[in-house]
Length: 280
Image (cartoon, rainbow, N blue to C red; front, side, top):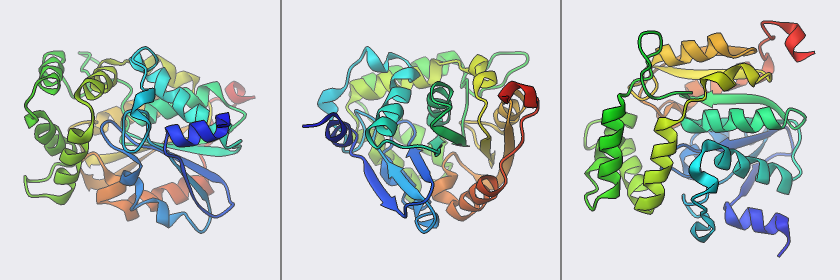
């Protein structure tokens, strides 16, 4: 099997749409590429859509999971770059949801020649509060309690986290879908992914991302508060912030039309760098 075929098999890579510019969509914690199913049809007539599952998620090759590689978000960024290389992609827009907004940033920093722009859907560079100047939304003790729950036999953590992410009642369709997706993961992989997600601090990396970047934040999101979006837009060298009239942490599912419209505006008219000399 060629290296290209191995990467495609390992990450369950799917290529859809036209032969236009490429949108490479990366899912968030505990999810898979199906979470993009309401968004990618809006672009299939104008863009090539590339979807993947991180190793340990969805229909990826779980046997390829390497705890050392995925001990930091750089391992997930390498997943994106492996797909970029396997498909020989150029002029790519990386679209990352939640923690994958930062994963996409790390990949884009490494490959400015191939990654043209970045779209971050409900991202956060730091989920933990760092008072008095930074409100991430979580306390370290609460995250440690969540990690202990993930490692245990009870799946109540999945329902709790799905409720926070979706901000739906117990009978909400999105909440149930997220719950089922979280529970489908191997508990040991889920715990490691959650630990890396919630304890990473990539605020210092924001200034290194020189490509045009769209930060999409919901008006009401307990996982990534609006203050986080404002922080990112302020510290990214070439970014615009769009606030969506939406609740929850998954606007690409709950408000796909709003998300698609914001992305179209960004792709048609990307922001200019705050300091043009930095991108020269």
